[in-house]
Amino acid sequence: MPVFFARWPDGSFSIVSAVDETDAYVQLDEIADEPAEVWEMQSCLLDFALTDSGTFRLIEMGEETAAEILKRGYPSLRKALAKELSPEYAITDATRESQCELGVETIKNVCRAAKAEQSRLRSKSAKRTPAKTEIGRAIQSKMSCSGPYADAMASRALADKLASDTLKKSKPKKRTRQQ
Image (cartoon, rainbow, N blue to C red; front, side, top):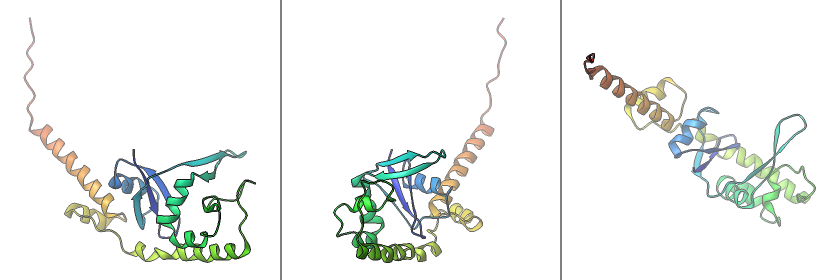
């Protein structure tokens, strides 16, 4: 099943496994209103540790995953880390000794890039993707949701109504008791 990257307007991101992009929007609606961008990932490897308190902590991302996230989702951060030998290790918390130490100048550049990335897509949060269907637009006007999510809800409601109407119209066969 495809895996999708969702970049939120505040700079955070989510990763979701979904049948298609519409399904990704439907699932992501559980987290927040609408991501600023969604795209299918070509690689996804994430490594988590179980902490002593019973929570999970991201240890690292696969090299291809980190490179893809930096390239497509965080161009300013990628540029700030360009001089690092292993930039993919620099984008997870430095909780392991094997992770690289960043130089003072790089740390300053990364901090500036992080601030830029946090605000880069904020304007997209005000522009919600409009639903494509009339029913979807009606749903979207009453709810705070993305257009793809509203269209998916409209499609499901239409399918449910069609099934209900079909059942109402169908006449059950008369049963006869066999002797």
